[in-house]
Length: 303
Image (cartoon, rainbow, N blue to C red; front, side):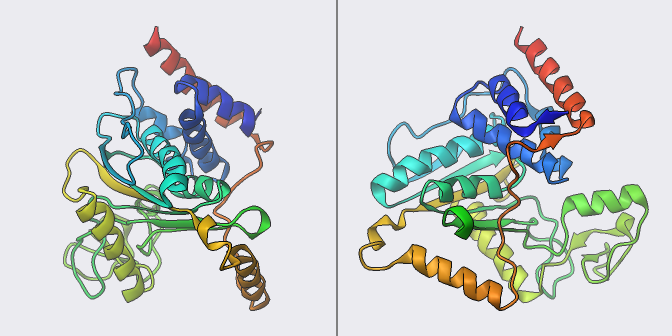
């Protein structure tokens, strides 16, 4: 057994210590705590001792484009998030486009970090084609998750959704288990609906046209504006930070956010928190063994 806070500290030290390493480590470990191991420390398989340093802009640019293809992806996304925090406070708005990004996990921890800093965080990631457009028959875009976070404390809201009806992990799990998929989430190689995971050639968008357009939106920003589309080195990711402090004299946005939360919950809605967990949460012995194995390999490669 190991507490999340202790596991985060150990992993952050192995990743080089510092704020970016801590944010990346906490994001990976949180995924395991939420029962999403494919987005957790399993991604340390991508880490090698010769990964390139995380690129930085070197100046307070409001918008920057960075090639992260030679970096450990969670560190690259964490570093970009931290740069935005300071730049958005200075400029009011800041954005970073990362290209060549391999697997990095969930978007929620990164936009949540921006919200905890008093900012509004928005992010999206495109990927290899595996999702058909609404009414289509073959894949054109990736599962293209989108995330947004704003507010602090109990009023903080964190939205993190894939634009597809299922994820790649869902398909892999169904193939491994032999279970049938739900209706209406996938197409086979002929463009026909299928529930057989082994026959899946494309996923369908979440919620029909709305999910299809959300996925297209992420593709336009991360894939086209950010340069990620068709990049053989990895995915395109965008992170945007807005500082609402300037509006506080004219708009009580915190009060309005609290009011919206109350109205939403009184109307029977769920106020999304983005899956955060307490740092004191205990992880089981299987996780502790897996973490020890990763840390031992990382330490050995550094010798």
